[in-house]
Amino acid sequence: MRQSVITLERFYASPLGATARDMAARRLSSLWPDLSGQDVLGFGYCAPYLRPYMKGANRVILAMPGGQGAIAQSGQRGIIACLTAEDLLPFSDARFDNVLCVHGVEETPDLSGLLQELWRVTRPEGRIVVIASNRSGMWARSDKSPFGAGRPFSRTQLRGALNAAGFVPTVWSGALYTPPLRKLAGAGFSHGCERFGETVWPGFSGLVLVEAIKRLYAEPRGTAKKLVTRPSFGTTPIANRTASERQRHE
Image (cartoon, rainbow, N blue to C red; front, side):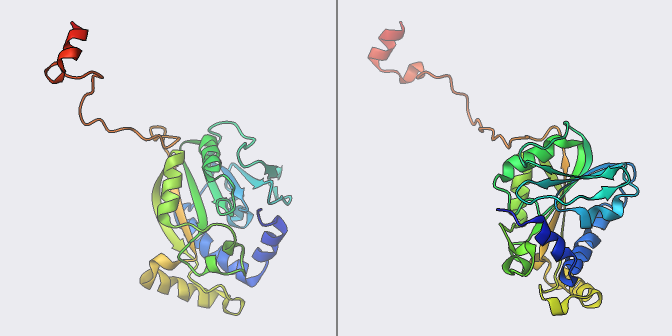
């Protein structure tokens, strides 16, 4: 069961949530400095992260999973939020240039199905950024934020899931080294923690961010190929056959 959209909205309205948003958005902006003219999809709960791009982007759509619920969000073209099934997104193939997934993978009941749907609606050479709770970080162990719910991920786990869906991971980053404590939430302290964590403890960030590209020559289902080490013709070589086997083949 996913956390409700009300819980997520209240979290991001709090000082702790604002700190989490600012630290993750800092990293996201380095990956996506400008999305002018792009069609952008946000899956999960992405409004706090995509709001800075709404004026320049051609189109921004917020897809919210049914188990979470949805809150109406307005853009330049009216309501931009929709409630959708995770395994059947209501968009045509190759529709979006950029896809952001936040609060999307940790609580999904079908990770591979979700990532395959995101692959389907992404254009060739389009880019997806997944922001997920880091299993090695403090935020995955805290009940004070939505990042403590569901399944956290390591880089290896995210890489495997994205590869299986047909994406090619290209850039990795960490964010949110600040402890998940309300009394420590604040811009000055948080920025200091980020600089310290990136230098000293890069693997213990609260969040892990990965950008991946949709490449059409990647295996969309993660199909494994059997390695052929020598030819097999399905019969026993003549020199190795018994007398009775030679008589049957004559």
